[in-house]
Image (cartoon, rainbow, N blue to C red; front, side, top):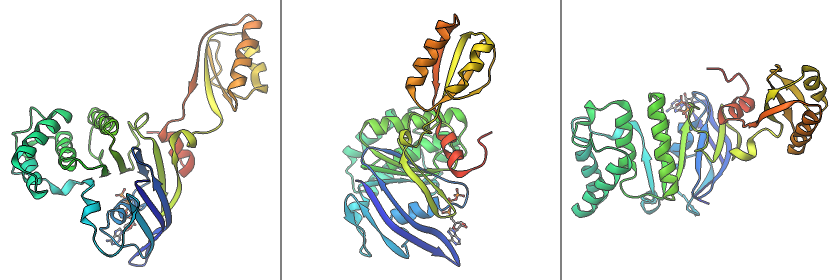
Length: 303
Ligand SMILES: Nc1ncnc2c1ncn2[C@@H]1O[C@H](COP(=O)(O)OP(=O)(O)OP(=O)(O)O)[C@@H](O)[C@H]1O
């Protein structure tokens, strides 16, 4: 277990910002903390990082309990990305050198890290440009490189995709996949749900300071799943499938049926074929992170 927080409470002003939150994050996972604006994501991340003290509750990092005593040894094993720590007048390379020096790395190691990270985050064409002149997406890559500079085991990202266009978000998630493959545990907060399917292993959903769920995406997917059939069907035969599950989008050449058991899919195929229907394609419609989010938090998933 990389991070374990138990029964965390935090009041800011007169508002209960975190309400009795407990959460465990396994090693090697990509964990996304999701929630609307003002839900408490940043506050929870600041508490995990020891930047904000909870009113009650405990935090364990790498199995060790964080107390009032600061633990730079533990925090050195964590990389943090946020917007505020790049010098805009310095080039990307100068920023990274400075960061390496802050971590006390020697110039040979700094050079090697810059070479590796430049390749990893596709910074070759931007490395000698002032950070202030870079696009939001390229700045984000420099921030990731900076956060990864001291080879941390855990990377914590607060709203990393804010302001990025879809192509930059896709590229960002490619980097996350690479880091995961390299064994880094990644914890990110976001309210922007685009692009995370197939990358994020677990999600936690927080709303008004309450953690509504926290689990593996696979386990959170609705037990009733939709199956999409394409082919040439007799409408009467489609209607008769109602005993297997709810039907939707029924047309002569396709329909969707919601089933609670994969065996039913095999039975539907048999029934249709025996009645002389042609099936061209059968595909399971996997519930996306966005759909899970809106099912749990309520509201609609349009847009
Ligand atoms: N220093 C502070 N002073 C007053 N209120 C605060 C402070 N920090 C956080 N809050 C309040 O706590 C709540 C949670 O804020 P937080 O920034 O953690 O939410 P968030 O989920 O990260 O939101 P966003 O997605 O908008 O960044 C909000 O209502 C916010 O106004």
